[in-house]
Image (tube, rainbow, N blue to C red; front, side, top):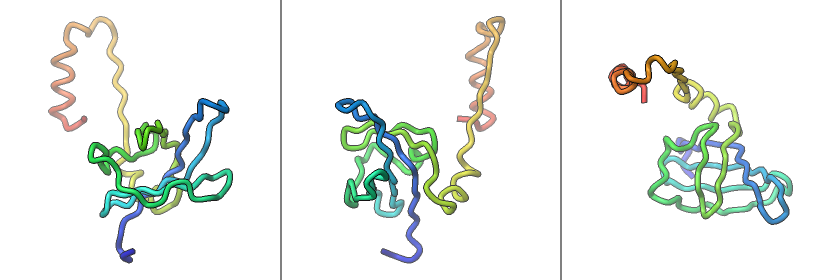
Length: 121
């Protein structure tokens, strides 16, 4: 591993339908190589060795609150795993909520265009 390789760490949850329990994992995303590895937090054992992710997943898909589909598992990223990841992503990981009252529904297309033009996506 290179010294300057960026690794993003997250706490991920997965609902296991057979025993009906939620399992927690430490998920590490290696930015330069587009690989992930996972460790089961309840057993402290490696769950998934370093593996390439599907091309449909990008670095921007990894943020707290995201749901990602990885190897047929729907994982929810619930928290940062370390302070380095928190520092890297806290500034760029921002969400905006816009509430439109029913009286503005007719103008929704114009409002969305203004929002996109202002740089919100």
